[in-house]
Length: 385
Image 1 (cartoon, rainbow, N blue to C red):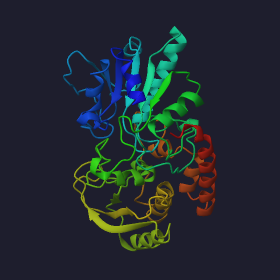
Image 2: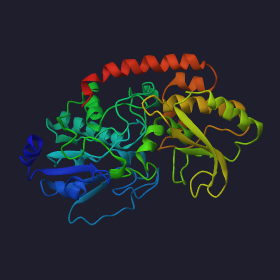
Image 3: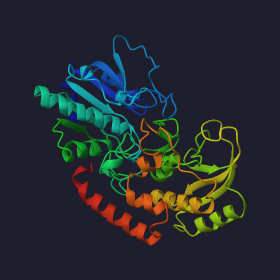
Image 4: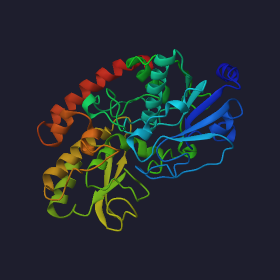
């Protein structure tokens, strides 16, 4: 294939790679093993969760170690916020930086934010020295397709769980989103995207699914994650510690007549597009570990029509109104930030936050989301691969 031949021309170049276990399958190997046969692979940049997704969310990878000869391991998810940015010394002697890591289609998912931070550092390096390594993106399919959801993240809320201007569900492949960053933010890095189908198959099947992180166990999880990730900013369990995180959710206090009213209200929302199965569950770790929770399993019936973000915003608004004494938006440190609560960093939009507090109607929210999704679809047209 043309791109394989072109990559072979880079044989022997000094390379670094941002990757993890999700880059698997080409020649039956982890891709970093394959690339080490082509490039002089000097550095592996570790994302959140580690190379094999060993670690849970918000756990430092500083203690991880791997034996790959004299290869340097640079952990980009340590104990301090500064660890998220690659040291300049780890980049300046490289000819190529390879990005081969799967995304799940939501802006909160941190892998492509890590790639963006690398891209920013390469841009700075180019301004300082006049040159920088080639940024080689090995593209993979978006597991939830091109559908988009949400509104652009306002700059004041930018953090590791959200890059400014991006929608909650962005509808792009890794190559598309990283090219969007490079061009929209005028980073001027030499970005080369190897198309889907070269190293990664054009379609993701459930039989070949490799969990990119511990709490994205199946492709179905990706369909609910654009909305259900907001639960991380609340005292509702998002299902960590169960076998169906983000599809299973609830809390010990969801009981009584208020729970029956919540059931009733949820039945009227996005009719026919999803099913809510009432259940009890016992998280083995994380929120409410060892405590029985009352809640639901979210079963998406029509993935192309179901709007996960709207579902979750609507659900949180109802819970906030029905359980005012028990429900809380969490405070404290979240992804290295303590200046804003997690719900603000995740929601990323003052209008959506106002909706959660009852300042906008459901119809106003629907209109607002539709308008922003239309604008985003037009903006990303050049970046759809």
